[in-house]
Image (cartoon, rainbow, N blue to C red; front, side, top):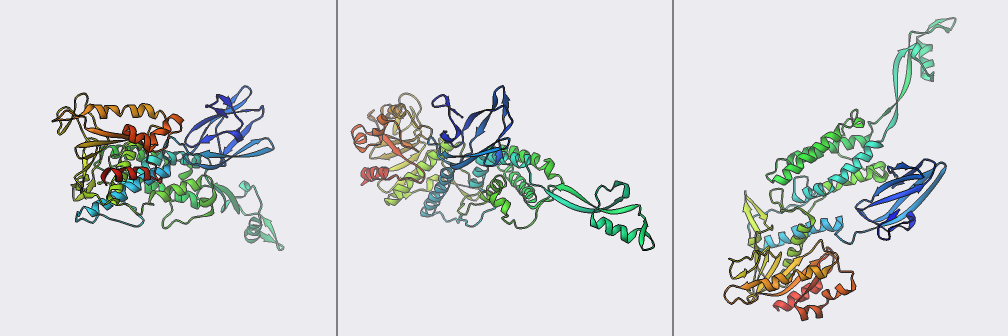
Length: 485
């Protein structure tokens, strides 16, 4: 396989594989070969001295198995797929969503808003988390369906029928029994064959239980996407229509033409447990409704476009959680909006969602500062720092940088525009006292590790905190506690 890092070909068993990446492979062989990944054949192209292709590593980490077949020779290679350290994994992404909703619900209840919007159990209704799951995993489902379509399950089915005797190709015991019973007899033995005989025909059919479930789930997903296409949210509506068209085409696949959809409860068969492709299909639909703690429905949407926006919102809600655990929250009502008999979690760009603390401080999401704002203004460009703590007429800027994995020096250097460009309206003094970057992963460069050091932060009043889903933000909590207490 081609290792981009060292610009050289590396044996498969020695390759460092990362999730959600593509890798070129090459095999020198005059004979035809077959390369499979998790028992799924991979496409390849013939070249003068062998074969080549591209391997698409799934968005998963762990042991992955390759099998190479060349004539009578079969060899298996096990590799480990490592998580991509530059971004959160799929599990962390789902955790981001869950923790945003959980903290929002706590703030909602503490705010004294007298509307019950809680719900528990196996949710089958439209919801934000479900839509985000569909949006982030529909391409994976498309890939799985293509694999199912290329090698669908099938069985040989025996079917008895009455045919003309000249069309009989195989004499079976049932055919002989039919001849003895219906042929004209003379002297105790058949003297003339009947014109039609009973025969058993063996034919291949795709109408197996697992394919019936696949068709039923496609029908269910198609109906669900039609519900999303009626949303007032233009982006969700547009994408739901697109995905619905995908599913419509899948339902017209040749192998599903003679399959009857399954009705009733679905059982987990051995195929759904162990088949490398059907197992992924079954798990995808299991996760489609696995949202027991969903609080807000599709009307109560979070205006998310990309993962980095969700990461910014998650960081804000984690800071809210830290302040709540310090008993500093006073009023969280401004992060909610009431519309159409629903309370919406209103955190989006340019909304300036504010939480008030008992010590007079405020925590603002997407605070707008420009040349005509008060009590702070910018004498250069319009600035919108992601998260701002205002306390005792000083600002503390926190800027989530989801897409920054290296070169923290440049990212931190950009924070000077907040420190130097935001002034008090009355005194023209600098308003920003400290600035910090929030990253999902710690820096790997030695010269950038100091940014996480408390001594560096105290000396220069800037630095970096690590905010990782499922990780420890104790360093940040100690900073907050030192700021207010």
